[in-house]
Image 1 (cartoon, rainbow, N blue to C red):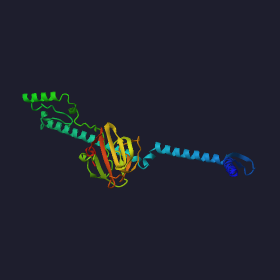
Image 2 (image 1 turned 90 degrees about the vertical axis):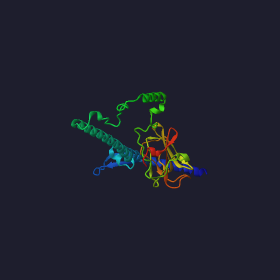
Image 3 (image 1 turned 60 degrees about the vertical axis):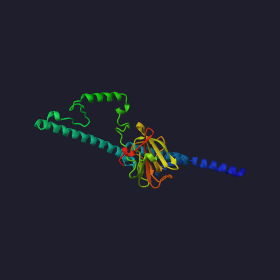
Image 4 (image 1 turned 45 degrees about the vertical axis):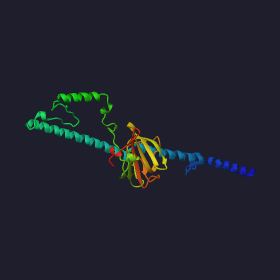
Length: 292
């Protein structure tokens, strides 16, 4: 036993001695046989030098890809940027179209006034956002004035009338979470708080809004589930996934792939995505916000 242990120690020492043993590399003038230049190196120094060189090469290549337009050719990188640009261009086009309609209506009214075909007082509004005084055309009678006064007094402290749409969706664009057809609709009375979207297996599941992954895990009934917390109190839930691509705490952008469509969980009968949308702890119908 002592001999074997001594032998192993000797082998270790010989190994370290062998890789640390330095060799001399010399450059000799062929005509004069004079040593022009020489340096010493070992196997360990060669390995370290090659490792540093490989790491530097990888870091330099990654820096070039990140800092230059080459990154646009990476698979999956351009998808999110393209989607954002498409949405922004669509909003710009819609705004420009609306402004053109307003300008055309304005010019039409001016032309009609100049030509005498339209009376000045007949023009009510150009932009649909403008408001007309309620008593502009029909004066209110005494009974109507009394009714309006009583109604305004009763609703004076009713804050609900100040906001006809309690959901803060202004400026929000909800991405369709997956390409497919709805196989089961939102039915709160039977506790089906979402929509089932039949899709191809391993189809990319996209984040409907910018947000943070608040849960990503497996449930025996729901399969692989991922939940995202969005601004303004919205939470989106994606169930029965084949694979989850994000972990809790990660930030995601709208349209980014977060999972793959699957058929996991006891309640799943085929490849599909069960998608839910919640607001302030209460389920809402996703079809009210997304065109599937």
